[in-house]
Length: 166
Image 1 (tube, helix red, strand yellow):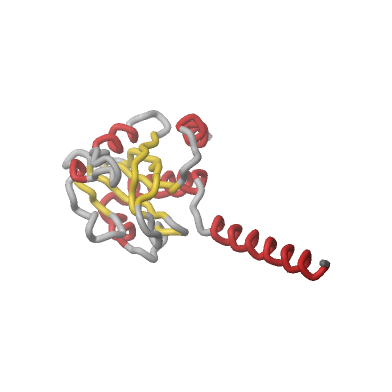
Image 2 (cartoon, one colour):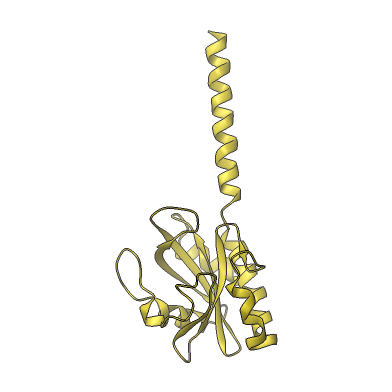
């Protein structure tokens, strides 16, 4: 009896450690806000000279399961992105993977809010199959718009707005 109990406890602990490791690989909304603000400051200061860094999959602007990207809202294009398939596309071609609804222009609109804004859509997640709920935090950065997203099924708009107010 004790052996079964011990084995069950060991299995439970192993599962707990594994899920903790998975959680550590997921970016948080707080990290997304901080990285987006840092990126916006850099893009505002360096303009076009800063953009090539955002195209690197293993660069400073990619971490855990997310990355920072740059939009050119005036010209309606994705200016910098670590995925070559997305870089350069028209913002009107950014479509929710589940509904087909365009969200590129919503990202530009969200960035115009005083503290930036959030846009929700279904998107592919690096290293995972299928489409996942992604909520991107967007900020204006000089002539560009900078954003990064968190893959999260539970955060509400109110919780996210509170994070961007900090």
